Length: 205
Length: 205
Image (cartoon, rainbow over all chains, first blue to last red):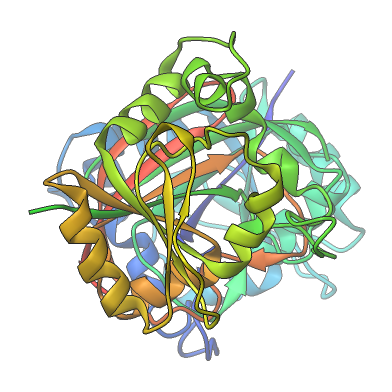
């Protein structure tokens, strides 16, 4: 059966975005530094239609995630931020389910990406995603609020944290008042001089 | 010259102790889980005069730290908590400088541990520690407040974080409102199924 996984960048002090996040500053002050490492990797640049970049340990992680994700689920705010910014074809090349309160017809893009808008909650989105995944995995793309919803509901099997060697001091925390009932076990650690990739199996949400 | 390093356990959500910490509950609710991994390692148990334990990757890290630390610096609260609890000989087997506001004569214990009480601040403690280290390294033992004082003053060369695969939800954070000016670079990552040992070089405090 499809695994459900999330993959997030986090600063050493636990933030997934910096302070003063706003529509024109979606990652907050300094938040881009969390994802600096990914800008240089080949597989990410391929999907952004930029080209170039390095094929290294960081690249291998990103490439693996693209390969295993048969479908994506994201929150409305993440979609809104990406709607203008993603190239066409967008980087997903797979069905994307967007959690929203506003019904909207599916939005078909080039390269296999179709955004489907789900107004009846995370369980419905996950059921639709599992069906569309065709045996591949389901990636909960973000943002943090959406990942937390799925975590709290015990619906995530694996959490990847890309721990950036930076501190932000303030911002939005991935684990803000998360329940200590969340039980995880380290599954894999891969690191480079730019970032540490931590993979945890979720034993209990 | 001696390096100055700190070595702290931290939960995945960034806490070095849990909520409701008090003199009879120094690590707070659930805080012992941060250090669970260390209870099983041979070198730690040796220093606690317990014996037994495992010789594994986690043990190697602890053993290495004991070997490199020629002297320790700790805050008053950490000393107070340990004063009753440490065995004699205490685990340090080296000079320990305790930051305090209350003058007290040195306290000589068995096995090479002498506690010296420093009332004139962290620079003085570090100068005395460097002299006593005889070329070995200086370990800032804790607690978090003391480590933060040294970090903020740019006096720490290397920060080890032993990232436990647990979440606490609330408690005392290692990086609470730390300045984003803190600049680190990953130096080493060693992991086991119990804990991930992250070592960062501090480039700018």
